Structures are given as structure tokens and as C-alpha cells.
Image (tube, rainbow, N blue to C red; front, side, top):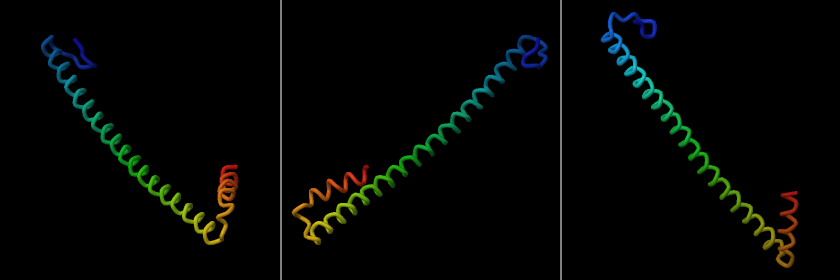
Length: 95
């Protein structure tokens, strides 16, 4: 009788070898699952950090744009046609 290329003397040897080989596979599968799980967690954490940084930068950018526009309109006495400036700016930046 052979199991995975190993000659077994009797059925008991075969069953014992089979059981041990299945235990080894279980340990290996658990180790691989732990490896994958650990890597997946690292990726998830990195994505979270990136999202937080991007959100902070976008908030700062929007604040600076608003401040810049406000200073231009108020200090330049452009309040009368400020809405038109914003509309034109929107078209220029998205067009």
C-alpha cells in the first residue's frame, strides 16, 4: 500500500501517515491564512491612513480656495459682480 509515494506496511501505517499528513496540511493552511490575514490588515490600515490624509488635504485646499476668493472679492471691491466671478471661475476650472 502506498500513500503519496510512501510505502505503508499495513492499513494502520496508512491511516497514521494519512492522519499526520492531513494535520500538516491543516497547520500549513492555518499559517497561510494568518499570512494572508496579516497582509490584508496591513493593506486596510494603509488605505485608511491614505484616506485620512487625502481628506485633510482636500479640506485644507477648499478652505484656502474659499479664503483666496473671499479676499479677492472683498479687498478688490468686486462684491457687486462676485457671483459672476465665481461662475466664470467654475467654468474655467472645469472646462
